[in-house]
Image 1: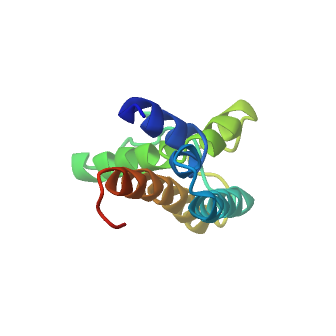
Image 2: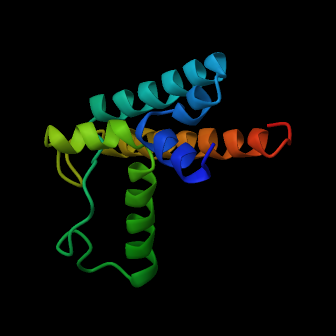
Image 3: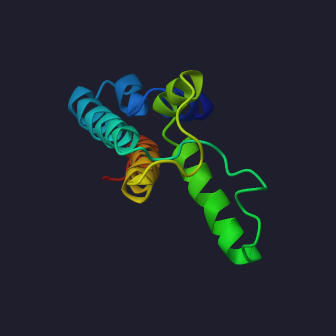
Length: 128
């Protein structure tokens, strides 16, 4: 199986790399965790947009870089992120509980990255 296909499908479908490898329990586990974390993040009004220059105005460069890295971690969630972008989710910082929601969105992206990397480890013959 092509590594690029495995990574791309694993990004679009949470846990999808496990599905291509016919590991259905691992797929179900990662799909449930990533989707639940992303849905919880949206329910807690986490910002799912890329920070605009006006949002970063007045911040030092390290803090601005941190915001951009966190926004990239949200993109790693894949399919749920694309669906949220399609439905025009709230702005970068919106709502009273955006910190908790944004943390859950970042965790969803990192869980999806973990699913992809553990599938690659299993594909190489190492135990995840």
